[in-house]
Image (cartoon, rainbow, N blue to C red; front, top):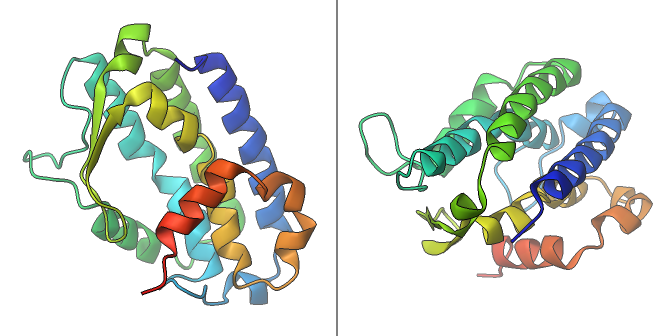
Length: 190
């Protein structure tokens, strides 16, 4: 099972690099459409500023002994694609700093919930309901965390599809087998 302190250190290191990358982007770069996506570059910043809330709720549900699959308040399946789209659209006019401030607040709250997980929690099954590009799956929460902690660089790769040359500048950070597998799963031809 993963070391939660190590997961937090990795999250923090990725977030530091993500913030620096976002601050380096020009207004033109932020407003570019991302190939193979319906989003602009800036929308991936909004996504990463907001997704920690539902993930933290998932951690709290696991701690309570409930189903780790994210649900809506009425118990229905959580549609992550619809949820993400709404959050992104709500934040499209916000500045990078506003988005990064929101991301910092959400991440600090999430880390408290993450560090409260027990070894037993990490063994519990997490039921991913699937999304527009991936089928439903069930995996132990600890296994999920090992990949999820790379969420920032996963989406920097997405952003770089609209930013010729930028991925080469970040190669050492983005060359990760987990990130590559995620990109392969999310960007299949067809």
